[in-house]
Length: 115
Image (cartoon, rainbow, N blue to C red; front, side):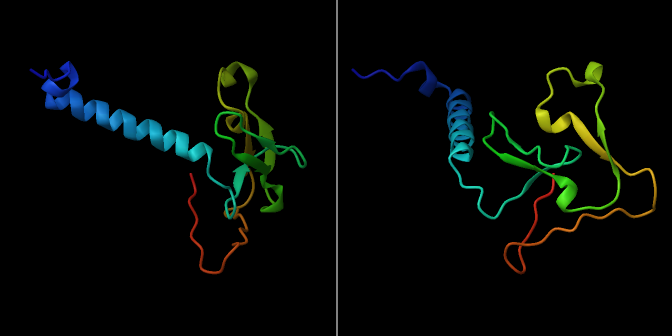
């Protein structure tokens, strides 16, 4: 007589297991995707100090090519803790009512995901 594994006996446990497998596959899939057509901007890092995030394999570039206003600031070291590198700097806008980034689309009519 065949017996169901304990995971299959409770539909809720099976659903949670299945969703966990799907999530893990999504995370692994992100690491293998091309960055072509994407720009990962680290606001506030110095010119020429781009880097690759070792957790996500995303290549970050300074924001200075996309804006002329604002000031780069370092987040105080006592506030940084274990934050990822892209959260250790910022761009401050102490002057002016509007401060806009100039994004040049790779393809006309493209969409942006800004987070």
